[in-house]
Length: 125
Image 1 (tube, rainbow, N blue to C red):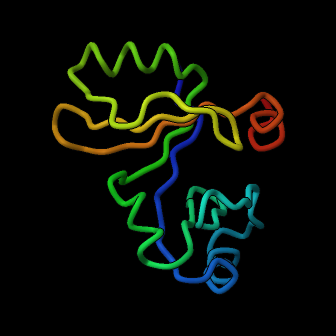
Image 2 (image 1 turned 45 degrees about the vertical axis):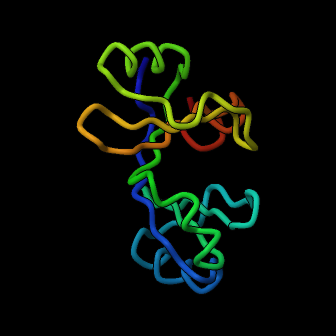
């Protein structure tokens, strides 16, 4: 299992309002943008912006980061052997599969295994 990318999560009321500054700071355009349930998501540089009404964003604040891995099944074995608890089991999503875990030390993280097309487009691998 390999970590392919890590995103710091940023919370915003409005996705379109948040992106111009991040475009200037990173020198990039968003490489991923989509709606997920009632929030908008955009990945730019190593930031993942989660935007929408505060009550909708609050559903995702239990994770402090989003980590993209190459093998979610192997990751799950590693997490469980280290005493982590899966708070959301592996689930299909718009970019591939994801799960949420609480590490034994209390840290909450979202882990994602992107579909091959997204890996190729974003990472060139």
